Amino acid sequence: MSETDATDSRTLRNALGCFGTGVTVVTTLDKDGGPVGLTANSFTSVSLDPELLLVCLSRQSNSLRHFTASNHFAVNVLHIGQKKTAQLFATPGAPRFQDTPWEAWHAGVPILSDSLANFECAKYAEYDGGDHVILVGRVLRVRHDHDYDPLLYYRGAYRELHFD
Ligand SMILES: Cc1cc2nc3c(=O)[nH]c(=O)nc-3n(C[C@H](O)[C@H](O)[C@H](O)COP(=O)(O)O)c2cc1C
Image 1 (tube, rainbow, N blue to C red):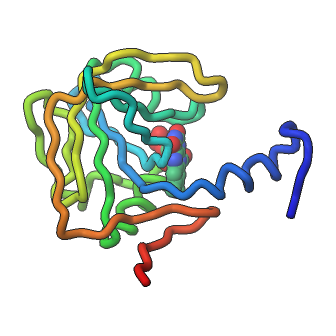
Image 2 (image 1 turned 30 degrees about the vertical axis):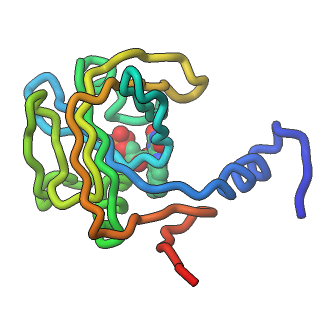
Image 3 (image 1 turned 60 degrees about the vertical axis):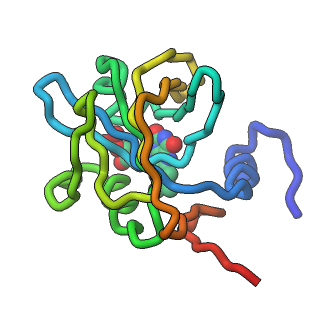
């Protein structure tokens, strides 16, 4: 048990890490049409009408400027077999798209093939989120595959579902 003021960042991070999440790769295109993406677990569904979702991108992320410059992005929800993809897209300087199959739908942003779910979005709003930027997208097109289990993230480690 640990209880402190919220300015103790270690305890705050540990407490936030108690909230289990899925894992996504958020993607867009740079100004030359090249694919850009990073691993993110800050994904949240926001609204059904209109169809909105959000993701929070760190102001330290090298990819951020491409997301703020682009009108579209995609959220790719990873399945249990995509742990290496999650690690790759969280590694600075790695050639993230070299061996990662992707396709383009209407907006052209990278849709990672063989994912648990894909959401192609038009940028709807961008908000200040302190040391992050909150990116809200309006979902244009969606795909999902119920045959897979999700890749999960909890208390700083990748996890998988357990059923009794
Ligand atoms: C499980 C996991 C979740 C992450 N979630 C986020 C997130 O929500 N937002 C974010 O900006 N970075 C997140 N990161 C960190 C980025 O993936 C990492 O810093 C990446 O190298 C950023 O790439 P870039 O600097 O090329 O944009 C996460 C990393 C991991 C491993």
